[in-house]
Image (cartoon, rainbow, N blue to C red; front, side):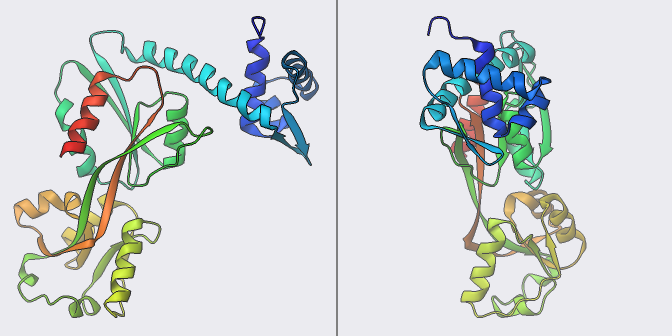
Length: 293
């Protein structure tokens, strides 16, 4: 093992992730025959077969699964090293790279980042994308943390640290003039109702609540993006199902009123990080502050 060829191991790692020799060869810019030869050399050196062929796909053997775990750690550390040097974590100013799921409340993101806003010791990079896209960037240490309203599983193939940092009950919000006369639950069948999109946990919980209340609900708008739902709640004159954080400014300014809290309809907020040797201290502080809030 002292003579382990890390070049061969890297080729194995790429093939294992792709699960397909052709795609891996294209990614590595080598021929399939050369790639197959390198994998065979690694198998000869280790004394174990690493793949079984299932049709055109390659399936990892039991030993291959274990070798992949080590390869993930080895090349993950290499990516972490490069990311650390590029981000300036070894210098006085820490560069925090935060990813946020596109549908996540902008107010929640702002509240999370507020402890470091204006700090001369922190440089922020914030980007939005789908959860899958962000996880891929986190995997190669191009992000330090993802903010999400969906949890992710952790296993040998997906080495994430997923921590719930906040939970909020949803509420019914609408124009101030309609709040005093609103009757729950019967008026829900009569109003212009704005709800999160059908793919969200919040929507599933609200649908279940309506079913339990025996309501026949007609939705005026189904909106995936919380920023858009906030605008429609403010401008449509309808009633929206949202966590308070989404419309916190409108509630404080009196533009909207909270008609009723819905304790059984909750949204969870998660901080997702990659398992790594060293994490920026400012990042750990943010997560702790959010968890205590």
